[in-house]
Length: 269
Image (cartoon, rainbow, N blue to C red; front, side, top):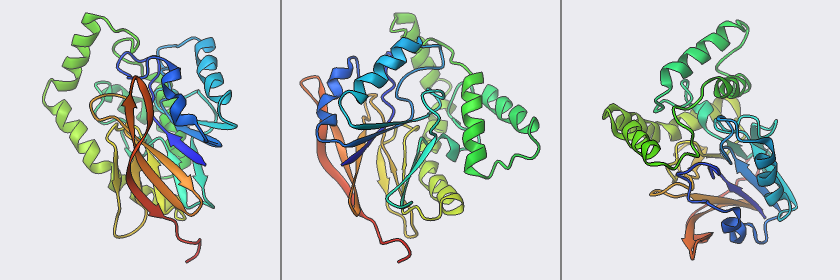
């Protein structure tokens, strides 16, 4: 079985994953594990041994582990996207669906400036293509930092996070717009750039959901390991994609109720 998880945000004080052992039940019986970006916090400079420890934890328990990069871990690997099931399932973190990468971010002016400068430095780059968008997104993630250390669980850091989330109210509106827009943006990008994809699996916006569209592809967002929205896991099982809720019980995370099941159509049909 191939299982996709996303947005663990290990080493972030807001993540519900305080110990990697909490994830053990999600790894049982998995032959291939894909972690679709933001597995941990690398932008503030998490020490290399800590990143290696996280990678080793999964690789000691699952025969094959694939780390895809996200905007918080742009250097976790050299793999930024994945096509599965003969190209019928496209997995990518999701920031490349937005021209501004993270349009709800407090660092949005810096992100826009970084994208502009990176594109200006390479006039031949076509920002409509996934390859260019991925390259720009990862380079921008290395350039633009965060306002506070994500690992800081102190009172002041908590107040700053609350302020950043709720004030001014336009911050909330930007987040709601991202939740609303991601399914259509992901589907449009896939149809243009990854036309064989019948299912697109994303993370990034921390809003779990499954959007079955009149015209393929179906778009899945895995949410995150943050509260209160939590997340979904995605299993690719033969000719179907199965989405289940991730539930927390006795401090550990496990597969919960069935959320959706998407049959894959034979290529060319």
